[in-house]
Image (tube, rainbow, N blue to C red; front, side, top):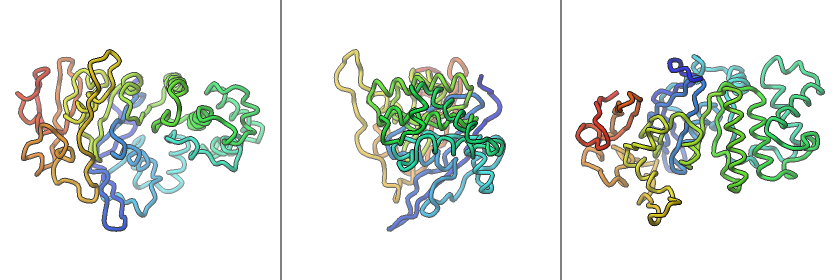
Length: 347
């Protein structure tokens, strides 16, 4: 059940730069993001827009240098992540937040067995688990593999990752992430490396497990169909900016930002109607990003102000009084909202 008042995770005005040869890449630009207790949130956008960087910053696993955080706050369960000690960060990663990374082959160490890696995660997830003996740890590891519907878990514990298929490795990673019983689970493109049938099985399994355990959940993807099926609310990210956020169904029925509309138009249609459209151009250079809206160079509705100033966030209230926010100067003038009458005010 979603707690509508208390954010489990809250990001405020977060910026992340990377110092590289030749200059500074300004990857994240003052983004805001939150997840409520028990909420399932989607984060969508093109490859390279900063989705994974955002999540790695939450976990404080970005390499520094070259990464640096010039401004911003990250709060998890009421604690300031940016000021946590190393011990507090380890505890947060053990019991508070778990992440399923995009590539299970890279996430698992090839020189250790599945059992060695899984029991190590369980042992160091909490101080209490460090008192478990080897038999108890092995039983917890077997339970984690059974939970993700892997057959013959006894054999798999003694297998190396190379002996498993891609789908099996991804299930191991899901079991590893859930074995610590986290309050927040982050899934970064969990089905990217899998064929469509195995991807569907993994995503259905993940959805069922999240619902059973009541975890808050962040799904990172560029597949809109998955987001529509698995989330309560969606953030749309473009070139290091959050450009739109809305309840899932409202976003799909009434996308407001030109970039979101372009993403919707790019989805293939099984009912026919011609080839799906793409978005012309490419994301801007992070070393020399535009002074104004980062989408202005690709936007069919760009105005002179878009090139000069970063658009504020406008809060749109629809008929159901659901929160829908968009960062676009088009919504500085109420008559430009076409689908329904709305009261617009900067926040």
